[in-house]
Image (cartoon, rainbow, N blue to C red; front, side, top):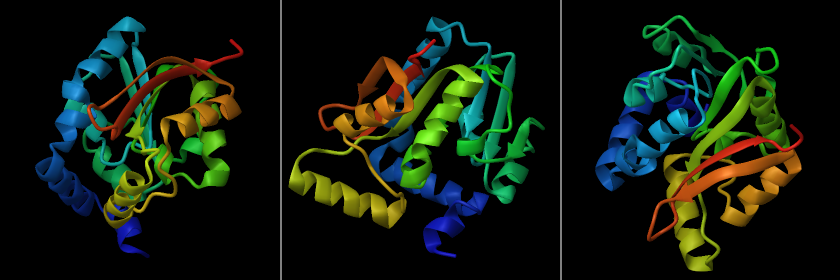
Length: 206
């Protein structure tokens, strides 16, 4: 098992990683954009039920304190789900690309720091699954640069700390949505340098 794989299977190591990123780049504050974007999305789309696809330790629920009636989460790591289940019993082992829920079970599905870890051949399935089980999908992730040198530095940084499979530019995000049959309702990214990305999408055929 690689270091990155061990981090994502060990709650204490994952917590250390988040703390490190928080201190280096004020990760949590910038990533969730002072939580305003996410809180506003919950209100704007009248969200009462959420499923966190790739919930990890359950930090999304803990950090944001979202006022919803139903909150579920899945993660491929048994150890992560075991830790998250200390918060609530509505966390189960599972993968985003094969979510164990019925169609339209939730108002909102969340893919937080997940998409860039999914194998390239399965990422479209993950987006489609998120749109199958919910009315809307909220994506919180990284956004890459089109500029060669900046892109190189970012990829080195991410590979060393994160070990993801692909870090997408804005154009590549849009291409992924098109392949998944998704329609973008809202998107934003950190400024002045593009780094953190947030979007709300829905099934374009509904």
